[in-house]
Image (cartoon, rainbow over all chains, first blue to last red; front, side):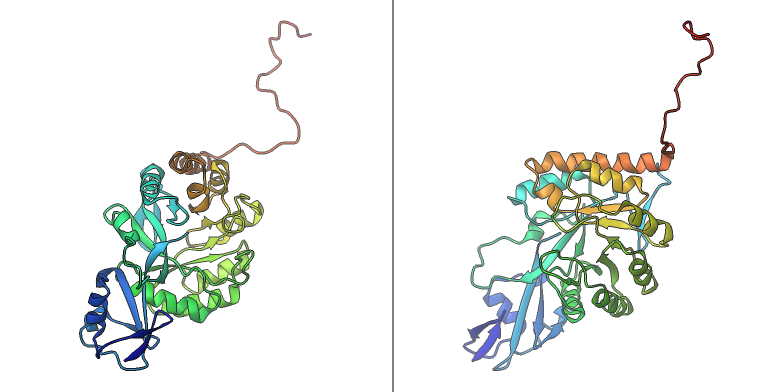
Length: 66
Length: 260
């Protein structure tokens, strides 16, 4: 299943929830924020929101800055 | 000095120095610099996670949340829309409702696009963010940002990372005089005296990143900046002497052995 993840094409073998996607990437959900088709996803819904073909996912975190 | 408190949006800080987390050569040096600076508030940027390289540690592992509050920024945003989007993401990480709002107007100077900044400030204030906008030394823009509900206003001293020091002393002083909210000089500080000068103008705080992270000895500079901000604040509160064109002798001529 083709999606766009952080601006790049990405293949999901099956429809996953945001929570499952983060787990598969070894990403701690408490350290990131996620956008699903340009809408910010509330952390409480990570295990509810299912990713569909063609979806655009952005996963961001805090990095050094001024 | 306990009555001279630094309050932003109802939160009291004992340090008037806000420090960045960017450009350090190592996280260890960053931690030591933060410690030496005495800061209680550090800025962070919002960027995509590297999904292919999971070996990099998280910046948050090196920021003790018991000691430092986080001020996420919208660095790299050139439109109000992008800044608002970034602010939403920053808030959703769940560690801060504060935002250092940057809407940049030019790549080389990184000067703010004040129109976009004002627009984004209005939107984010309405959504309950604590907005600290990075702006320039224009008192009218600062007034508009205050009217729009900003929690503090952050005029730049000079371009980000330039180390040029406070370029428009008079305007910064005017901004402080006109403002009903805290004024924090953000950007352009190069060395300790720049921070002291800013505080002597009466501003409430100073924010810097490159001045510390880019110094040869960041930890030493962080300590210098801590002292510089304290020193400048005390000098301001102590009420300096007036500037005079000519001399006024320190002792009366009466009783001079060599006198008439």
